[in-house]
Length: 480
Image (cartoon, rainbow, N blue to C red; front, side, top):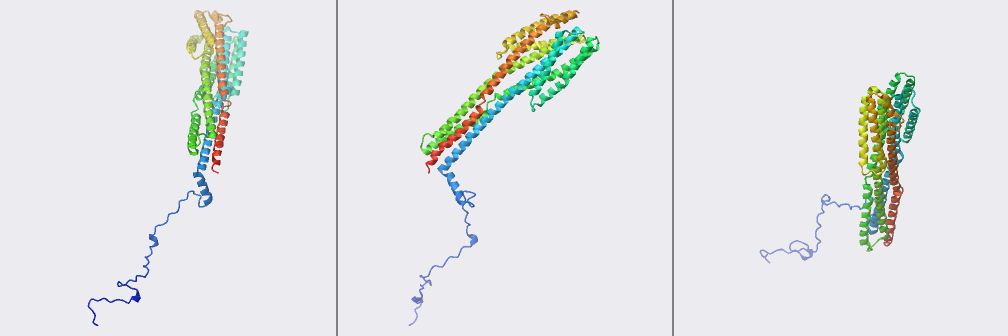
């Protein structure tokens, strides 16, 4: 049979191929595998703990506990406990520092200042008594000699007292005391040499007196005054530091209270309980710490301010007036003994007396000074009498009546300069005693208020931490 044009050839059915040459029953060909260098690299699983590769079980356990509700509660309680104890430690340290500062002022700084003032006074009295001996010529009266010996003895005692109270850290006071101790025997030696020559009528005695007086007025007395001023300045600086409020301690305790209140609100929302007794007790204890700190701080500051206003400040003013009075008295007696320099010494007396009167008036007009008022009034009256007596003595001296002028200046009469100066010095001494007693009493009261404060606030802070721990324990048991 002839082939039909355009007819297609069919393959046998047994081969399973369709007309397109594809075997429908065959599995589809596999795709070519993707090259390894084109495949994306699998990222490593991020570990929740850096130690998980070494301790996988323990690391997962710690992480799970830290992120769980009990773990968060434990961490919060631990942080609050640390804050309570830290605030208590800061507060106790601040209080202890203030207490140590007051102890130093009471036991060292103020006694040294007082001894330095007594040293200056005794040296001035000795110098004035030595000059008085040369006014009479020959053998001095017994009371003048006795006054000089007592003054020299008082100066030595004050020097020893001041030296025994100076600490190793007070190098300036140590140096001043050492210099005074070296110069004082030289002064007394010159005075005794001058006295011996004066008794036998040798004119060289006046030269020895001038040398001794120059040493006292230019070396010994300035160092004694410097010693007193240094210690008085330390008292003033200590007061300025003490009246500053302990802001760091107050802020630390207040921050703990705020954190405790905020934590209790958070805990109340989480546990559906209104109050956690332990944390509430901890908050109350820290509030008590804050109240105690503020009360003690305000009271001690008030006492320190009282010590400054009614103790240290008038005491320093009275001490300055007494130093000026001693200087004026030395000028008065020295002017009689050294007649060639009488005009210059008289001018020094007038300047010193004017400054003295001005200081007394300013102290009397100060309304803050309530202690030693009667002593200040007596000092003003005695100073006025002294100035009047000195004017009378100066008029006699200018008229050439040296003997009568000497009797008014250094004589035993009740209407002379000796009696007026003694009344002034006694009044100043009384005022110094009263103001010093007020200063020390106020400092002791301020220190007493701080005696149990440091240990008390630290104990309350630790108790607050224990209360927080006790308050969180029942909540932790609920998760068991």
